Image 1 (cartoon, rainbow, N blue to C red):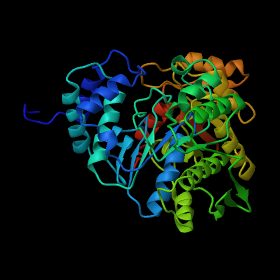
Image 2: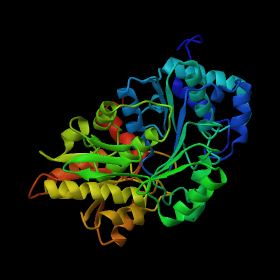
Image 3: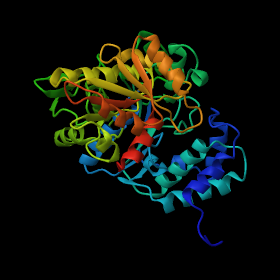
Image 4: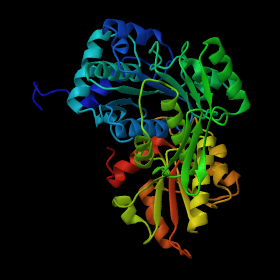
Length: 439
């Protein structure tokens, strides 16, 4: 490579990672300082829908984007974490950001930051906001990275709507050890007078959300109270004060995706910013896609390693509540077409492996624990022991490919159903290894 060759995106990201000694350091001060030096791009955005919660954020945003785009609107999207490449995090008016565009925005943010301490997620978020401010669009969908109150995305003074997906126990080392405390942190995205659209929550979480909404005098639209969604005769049926929608079922698989689609619909109907007709709701719900959320891998290198006729499903769920909805989706599959289930799992060390794996106890006795090639990954033997504590048959393997190939030696009464789960980082490795593109 010549001296004049441009810095690669990977090399730039590695350099930006060295600007702060910690990967996560929740604060808004650094972000606010950098945005001021960039002439406040966060104040020059199209209407913003800000989404926080523990589970379902990405799927809800996928439904929001699909509906808005079906209504012929241009949509910017910022999500995290990415699975295979960072470009997935930034979508400009419908297309993933190019390497060159993202590199230049990051370099501009790096120059403005002038060497001050800042986390990589913060500078990535600033770059996304800079790009959103410079490209025309009709809406911005903004997903929190971790928490809400002190998350780097919480710099929009007056979004069009604040959306709260189901909240559970996760990231306790940063957000607190109680559900009420975690919910309070996530409800920190609520802004004065801005509509809050909320999924069904536990009583503890809902109390914290309601308290923050009262403080902010923010109208609260709650699932099961002001809006309702369910399934009738194989159709998604949504109802609120504006009337009833009878729609196709979501393309995203699992009964929880009906709830996520309902949350997206409720969010768009709670604000006056967008005009969405029935056809856009119908098309958007039916077309929304989101990788590594009960995603079936139909072809690719890993699929070819599996026993003939096997199904491979991928889900990045990584906490107890996430495991519960995955298990419910698998139970639905089992009811339709019974197959023996094998769970291949890898997790990060800060996750509750016992709580996650317990969800699968009634569905399988066969767990294969695998490593994740990332700092902070849970040791394979620790994950395996969590499965043994639950009375499961547990093996270990050096990788997902080895785990899948090992199933060829076993005799099944029917081709197995293989679930790979436990971490979005593992899901990214799987998509890359399988050659599955994320668009």
